[in-house]
Image (cartoon, rainbow, N blue to C red):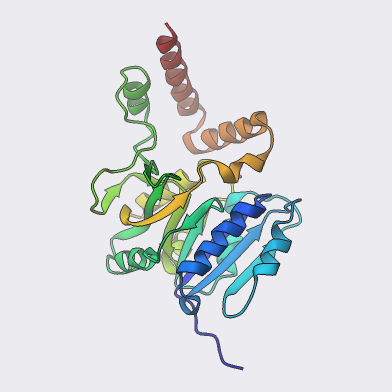
Length: 273
């Protein structure tokens, strides 16, 4: 039996009750990326739908598709760390299940990261379903920026996309698609497992900056993103709101969390007048 070549890229996809969009994501990877240099690791958080059975039916040589099935929903951060522990690649692409590849430019993204030791993580351009750019970059999440946006009406707090087609340094990236090398991921200590879902991406990017590394947005690699599709199965809106608040308090601390929410609330009241 021929020995498998170690892959360059490990694509790690957490999933939970998203069978069809996960399947679409996997099919797009298989369509565009070479199996010799790529492996796929799906970490399923105890889905009650047919996610796992669909993936198993898709599993075939020469593609390396690994499936880790948890007995309960452990959240996004733990699933990402589990996927990394099962991986063989030199680079990790942490990917939401509601994305689809449109070409093989992910390897341009890898080359861009590999040639620049000052970089910590890189993210591709995300596209809406009509192929227009989608916001995937966070400006600094400060009370001053919140005041500028929600009180003064100057966009400075919400996600955006850089308009330049040149790669650019940014403050933080959405966790929808983040590329990092194995050594640097290990240096960071992986994803912070205090976060079940929400704010784990900003915490990850904060720790990158603390290591004096740059975060880059790379618009020459593009991924289609069905925004919000991977979160629709999370339960009631009240449950999701609870997770969002918990993540915000963990990331910002109590004082800044409530200050930011006060600014946003005041801005909403002013717009209603």
